[in-house]
Length: 243
Image (cartoon, rainbow, N blue to C red; front, side, top):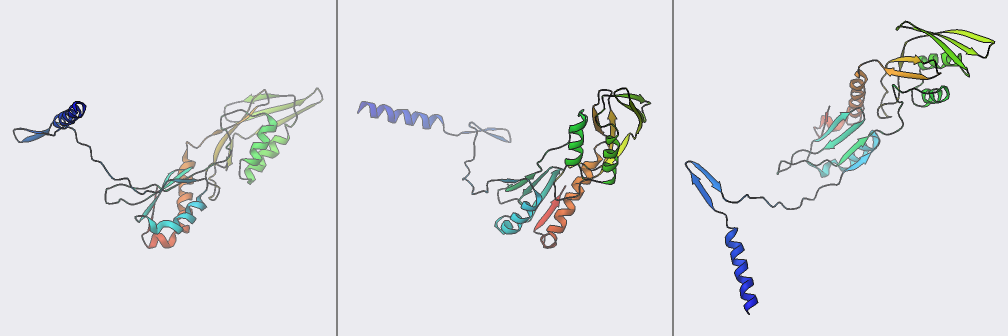
């Protein structure tokens, strides 16, 4: 009995110590305890992540009526998109879907040997007239033992030597308009300018030369894709595209 009495006394003491009191100072009222609201657990959707835009379109069309509309499609960057619901009664949102572009990317500013540069140029770029022109130029220095460079900062003059028998002058254009795969595969890959350089150790490199303007083009292409896919939902004000 004594133990039970002690427990009851301890509980009463805890309750007494944790009573909330208010103190008035002039026109201001202060609480002696910090209060934290206990909110009920919400039945929210767990985020699903995709690697393409088409999946976002399909699942939004199927499930949009289960969320507070309109749904906002936020184009965060050239490689990331999220879908966000409208505010609920508690001023909170759900983020049920997102998409992040995947796949290999060309490493600009990095030097490639001949074979890896050719493979990357064929597999990581949209094949255009300009990429074909660059590939044609590279054939002239195929399997060389060394190259000699004459570089004035604007153009490069390359002498490709193979043994003691062959030497060919190759004029290298400094800037190429190319379209590497840098955004979602469903949209047009934006073209931009790249500085092409060759080192005297048979190393080839491309450097971005547009200051990142391609990212604006890529986001515009993603917006155009969604605008076409959700034309009816946008007109009905069930979908809003941001970014």
